Image (tube, rainbow, N blue to C red; front, top):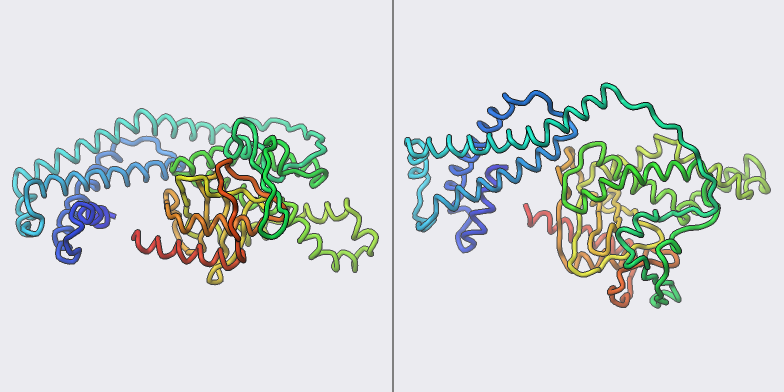
Length: 411
């Protein structure tokens, strides 16, 4: 982390210089940076009395920002009015071993330590104590009263209203044929629903999942770290949104039809209420959920961003696919932000997803989202007329290849 932080600053400040030529110098400054951060953390932790594990992502994000900030200050200070190629590692080691260099390290360490301690007293300590107290004496759960509903939204209304509607209206593109669409404005409550898709009990469960996901969605759009429960709530929301979609529901019922026909007979197997009951058992199957969700959780997460409203929300909600044998998920969150679980495996979750801004990647993802829809999709009012889409799987593979190339370049 320390070497990469210094290296990024050096490459940015001196792009014309060879990276290998400056590697020894980078190593010296990285050692100084590490000593400052390690010591400031030691001093800080000596003063910490309560720290909840849910704050780890937020603190890690603050640590990364601190590392990057101090890295920039070190490079700026040590190259001021000097040609970087004339600075030797021996010269830098001698400076930081001198009284002036040691005083500079100690002073910077204390500034960081006191800043972290101030932030801890103001924010992290109260939040930790509140969480620990709540866990020790959790409130009694409130009794829920399941409402009877006629219409089931398979695209949550709060998502449509908050992130896709403009002055309460949606721009809907209805398929006329393969590459032509009829565009009109509709109310945000007029799209993404069907009658009698689920039981009232399951609809109520979906509302709980949506409520748990609202804050993680806000945070991930704001490039703010999620703690472990928030990360799981966000992923759970995305997976359930796919499972509850009419297109997936129809495929599952058709897949099960030969089995159910053999078990209960053709008439009962084709009974809509029986089919609904069979379908809803998937939401009680923890093993199935784990098989679906685990590969997505331990896949590298990416947020693809655009300045223009390029992304669309298909009636299928999101896309599941595979790339190089690994499951991927593409889920548009807003017209300018799309989440991708990329299929690039990792063993430890990053504090925040990788951020990518690439016009070609955004266009390919947008075309794949359009190709995935059954009948219609919604977009921003300034979304251009859809181009010919192509095959969804080929577009997804192309998007994943671009993501892999961009992430490798970033590192």
